[in-house]
Image (cartoon, rainbow, N blue to C red; front, side, top):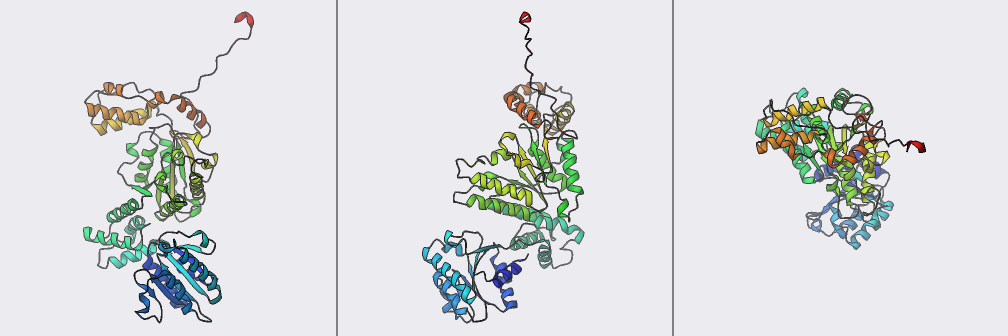
Length: 494
């Protein structure tokens, strides 16, 4: 629902305190002004630099920048049968004052009598405790694809500057999640560089936007599945789900996968390659960057990051080592902040309707609660075991070619090696100018350093997870725990 539609409902219902979260104040004010014009409502605006701007105000009267006077001024606009709206821009900056909070509280209560509505327009939601139950919060949505198309048409006025509709979809996908001004800047930059609108400049603008927010990072690499050995079942599952679903049917969209494995088996690399394979950007959500020092800030930053992910759909959202990301989910030591953040993420996983494919990776399943991997949060839970002989041969070939190693060199003993250890051996061979066998002496497999943890993980995954290498349920074959020695209870034989 558009901003004007929701605001009209709240005003008609006489919600006298409204908070609109928006980074695009001018666009929001334009929409509000048009609504007031259509409904014949009185509109006044105030900001610290320009002061009060209201009908009938002289320039001398409008120059006052006192926030208390601004709140009180709305009563002068009240009429017996009409509605008056006062928009206070960036007013969160003044809500640390007890006098301002008290005046705003009184005005919200009195506004029920004379239909005067106070609207706070701010990029963040920071409502004082005294006003929490008196103010309703709205969001000014980012532009949809139709609006982005209109912006592009307004920028590209010459023939040939705007691609045909069949070529325009990747550009609109790239622009999703940008504000109106950011989209205009990206389209203009593309015209300056290429004399037509392309997706390259749009992606550059989007990367800068995510970097400034500090909540997400954008990965757009050139490696696809051809540079990732093994994992044939996982590759086929994800590619089929993402390329064959009905995009316009929200009930039939893929949700994502949870990947469990020992370190170095290719979980993160798979996610990055998947983005290139299906033509989607990969957003890396670093949960540690969401932590804030103020009360409630971590939870708000989590919700903000999830809103950005939704706005950038279609995309892939990656959370690496999710069990470490939400460490402290039991609520101890951090006043339950991690637990509340995890609850917000779980709710989003279950309820989001955007075309976002979520890939979560984990090394220690014991730290994940059972509800995290239940059905309808993920399409599948996959276990990535150590590569088989056939998979190892494919991985050796990939990294031999990458590092320019003579293919006639024999492969060292790679028993229980992961793909990361094969890559490390090839890299060290090229770096130190050694043969593969000599370079392998510098590689200590994780199967040796963490053998007990790997056995526990394999035992847990057996019969519970899908296999990433072959279709069907994963069944433990290697590294089976030793059975206890049978003891003959006959005294004569002991």
